[in-house]
Amino acid sequence: MAYIEPAPIKDIENPFESMMSRFDVAAQILGLDPATYNVLKTPTKQVIVALPITMDNGQVRVFEGYRVIHSNILGPAKGGIRYAMDVNIDEVKALAAWMTWKCAVVDIPYGGAKGGITCDPRSMSAGEIERLTRAYTMALIDVFGPDKDIPAPDMGTSQREMAWLMDEFSKAHGTTITAVVTGKPLVLGGSVGRVEATGRGVMVSAFAAMEKLKINPFKATCAVQGFGNVGSISAKLLHERGVKILGVSDVSGAYFNENGINIEEAIAYRDSNNMSLEGYQNAQKITNEELLALEVDVLVPAAKEDVITPENVHNLRCKLIVEGANGPTSAKADAVVQEKGIMAVPDILANSGGVTVSYFEWVQNRLGYKWGLDRVQRRSDRILKEAFDKVYNTAQKHDTTLRIGAYVVAIDKVAQTYKFRGGF
Ligand code: NAD
Image: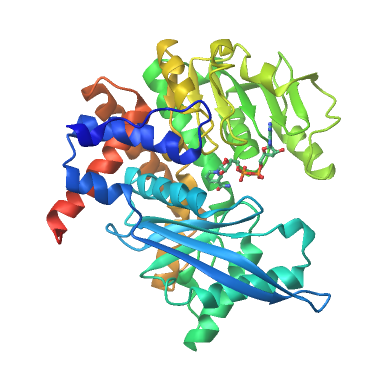
């Protein structure tokens, strides 16, 4: 089967290569037919738009915006919009495919998409960002839609941009259409529980994995890298359920206390300190590299991609990795994680609580009804737990890792849908 030569893993990995190397292994296990393989490798739609904006100084600048729909075979495409200087079409393509697998693994009826604008939002005024967001929405007015493609926030964007996008889209259609975007402010149809959703999914995945490894949560120790939305909420929810968090970190460094970090206190400190842990007192300061190497039961990388690398993977002393961040383990390091006998709950499963509650937001918008927090949490916990069990059983069946198991579950679902729908 020459068509499924696994993509070589290069020394310098990019997200697309990382993703494809795993995709290829899963495709091999599934014995994916060449036609479906090639369809799934190729995004369904790629759009590049020019966005001329009048800046505050009166000059017109032209920005470039992107939207890639990797697949919409399972339903409308879903994925965030990123504002950053290094956004480019290749990165957006990789992230769009990632969204396809993430939605498929938790079995929500969405395809995968991603978008972005090459810009530096920190150097722009709110007015400039608003004009840019509205121009982007208008340029993609035929792409977006509650039944077609539903954006969400990503790096450099937040509920503020989603509100502008929803407003511009609604004006163009002459009626308020909240379901065109998720991650909106609560008052505009956002969902309760969305802010905590990703961290909560990390906690649910960690508990499901600890059960398999027979780790008693009340005796378990944990280190969490990254103390933003995902890291701090994962730490808080694990801590509340009896897990001792020995270390936390952010871009300022890492903080270790062998008796356990008081997470509520650390969050309060961060909130009062310009969202930084810099200067946090009730712990010993160590480096982020030392945090990754702590002897703990559970390690939650929840900061950024490619932090567990071929260079540092040998230092890991945890039993379980739960990937809060997207792509924290490079594909090359993955093999060593496996050799060391560490269980790793992959990103597309562990951090899918966010997209799951985004899906609930869209459902509520379409129903014209608001769910309570209890319903949101109960349903997302159940979806995450069921997805974990399915991935675990698939991995056992094929004698492979949870990561490959997750790709097998996701690719199989998409491939089966193609088979039933036919058309090529
Ligand atoms: P965030 O911006 O709220 O927080 C990021 C945290 O990581 C901050 O504490 C920052 O200081 C820290 N950090 C940055 N660089 C670091 C470094 N080199 N070493 C140590 N810490 C560093 O971001 P977030 O929303 O929590 O997202 C974190 C990760 O989770 C990203 O990979 C993101 O793509 C992924 N993710 C987020 C969501 C979500 O719902 N927010 C959903 C799925 C995946």
